[in-house]
Image 1 (tube, helix red, strand yellow):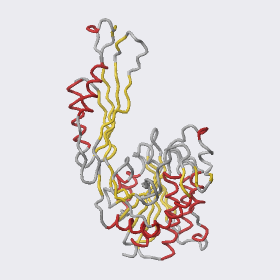
Image 2 (cartoon, rainbow, N blue to C red; image 1 turned 90 degrees about the vertical axis):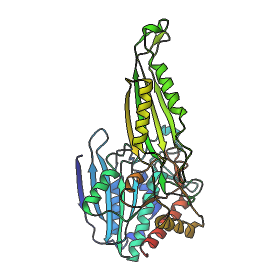
Image 3 (cartoon, helix red, strand yellow; image 1 turned 120 degrees about the vertical axis):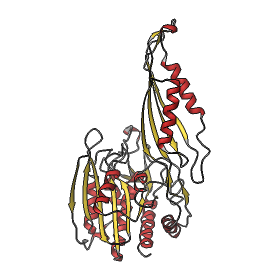
Image 4 (cartoon, one colour; image 1 turned 180 degrees about the vertical axis):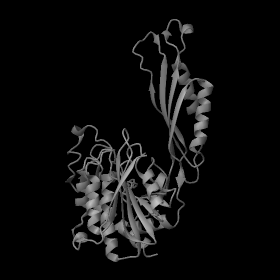
Length: 397
């Protein structure tokens, strides 16, 4: 895939950089960049500017072409040797939906009643701002080792030109981290209650069944694709995939769209389409489920067209050193013992896990992707302390 990169070196931090850094101010600056995927809208310039002030070397990586690209990505690193710890996240956000339904401009980053409101506040510009302030404190400690940030602009979209090609670039440069923390909004009811140590896999499928159009009064002269589609989907739903495993919920298949597009009441349509998603645990692989899906389709509609996209396999980072470090930092800052979970959707951790142990931890996510997405300002401040505690523990081992 086409790629362009630019490297910018910053050899030393500004004396005033740490003093002037404020997570809330930086989060607001990031939110004011309307970086609806795959647009960057200046978000990585804002982030890169803050990191350059701290002495990070910046590598701007642009991958891909239309329609899913190009995508702007940023790798920032400081220090050398072991350990090499990385924060990972994304600056792109989902669309706002009906802006009139928001209590304030989604990109104004307003603060009211102790909450920061704006698209991306929870998912995940707040966490990125916390990364930077925690990094500033880490730099002051002058600990040995390397700290990096892996930031993509393609997590909320197809995820084709973001973290996956960035990791290939890191491998080629010999910059693979030893441990990684993704700042996704994992907390459920309150900050600190959940650390994600894995995720289920995800398979999307598009099914098209072609028949023969005809008059409803003469069905023997037609071939109704809806009949076969209904039977097919019923058969797929009837199979219980599993009952869950030690670390994962049960796998589930959900039909997400059925389309016929027939405006007439007396016409058998010529075509029926459906779309489905399977979220699967570690008892399955994407390839195995694709084979089962195609075999079932053939049994009901031998000439059907099937397109499958596996966007991630199920994975687990076995509880141990990394999750212990994050949990200890949470307990020390807010006194909450996190649950280790694999629930929820996919994230870019599905790519990173190929190279190193990875967990996810971040702000409460109840409002992410919703109207009036917001975070508590106090949670943002506490997240800085937690991330700082993670760094202190990682680099003192």
